[in-house]
Image (cartoon, rainbow, N blue to C red; front, side):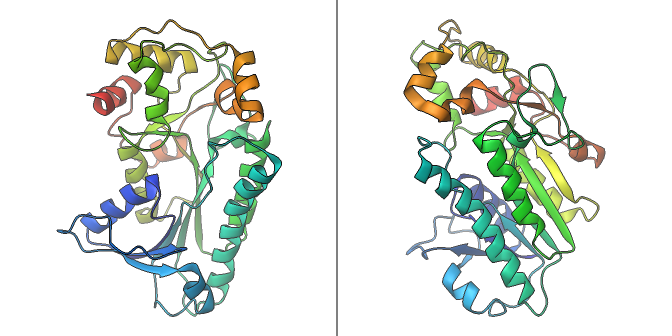
Length: 301
């Protein structure tokens, strides 16, 4: 396949690029600035780089492509000032709008676009488990941002659009997991708030595999919950992390303390969702790490 990858230099994007190159796909990464040196293994074909300005100026300059994967989005791990919230939203919606505009101007646009999204648009849940048929009920800034993100993605003129509703992507390095693990390394791990909030998670290997699966499976379209089929709460996640790393899970962090330290951003930790990847399971996708214990043992071994 010939693929355009937007966000190919990020945490998930790097792992996805490596997987695509390993199976023989041709990858063109759209980026703000071309790197001076490729960050990928020398024994693999290197991805090609093109700037947004170059692609926007002439969408047909790269030839025909089979698909586009869009993972662009400014990090939400920052204090949510008004300006930061505007940047977080704009980075998502404006990128989708750019892709839509370029596809309208391509003489032979690709058949599939896989666009990142977020699991938080379902709202907050305790014991309730969400799948792709659950109603969209955003309850905070991030949920409302994801709704607008998907609305922008829906404007992309493509035969098949997949919207990946992504949870916490866990890996040994990169992403948020090393920060979650840090208190346990220091023997200070424990639940956050009351610990009942859902914590949707997925191993990075499965995250990459399901993107490839969505690219290759013509029958998949629309929203896809990009989470493992093992919905857990914050407290359950922490207890399992303590168990597999042989560290105590005993030091709770009060919600009021997080609100004082992080402001509105504390909703990332104090609220959450339990979710199931119903569509992936119905299409026969096989998770390498379907259970939390196995995923955490692999990441922390």
